Amino acid sequence: RAEVASGWGNGARVLVVPVVNIEVFTPGCGGPAIQPHLQSVPELANKGWRDYGNRRGLQRLSHMFKELGIPATAVINSEAAQLDYVAKALKSSGWELGAHGLNNSSGNAKMTRAEEEAHFKRCLDDLQGSLGARPATWLTPGFSVTERTPEIAAKSGVKAFLDFVDDDVPYDIVHSESGARTLCLPYCMETNDFSLVLTKNFDARQYAQAIEDHVRQLAKEPGEKVVCLGMHTFVAGTPARVLALSEAFGRLKACPEVR
Image (cartoon, rainbow, N blue to C red; front, side):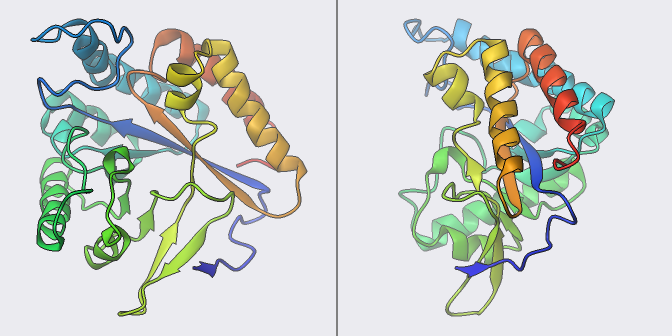
């Protein structure tokens, strides 16, 4: 690990990076659920809830960030980008387009080196084909990593890596063999919509307020900080949460220390 020299915030005390996860799940393998007791096969209710995020939540979040003039990053399952309505929404969003594996049912954890290298290549190739640009940002699905994942990501052309969650400041990983450096942007678990909504059962207002409070506290502290806000189209992208988020982000935009 190597620290990033101060001044990276360009005058901001807190840099807020919304990270919108665009995900699909292998049929029959389950996934996040709004009503976990419903486990029929074929799955209708919970699958439909997740699919709604990509059909409507994605567009709703894109519209919100455009209206607010807030840049965002999408991390995308390459299989999701093959859906026409997802690719269309992403191409018109103006967001940075990052990679998030093939789908959210298969992670890297049990892969051999060769399998993991092939996984990175296929994901990045497919996203380039679907979206017209090769991603340089990576978040591994479900944090399902190997000890080799950061190194393979760097060799695959990834410049910004979101798998670590252990700080409020960016830092570089220096790879011992090559000397290459990968920028790590810590992905905040405290402000993640899964943590706040699906685990803690916060309502829309509580969810948005927790994000606002987190950022405001960091803005009071010395030094530069970064907050990567993990959001999912089927959680953060619902009407009530987008309304609450738009109001909270509007207030944060008025804070001179926050960008």
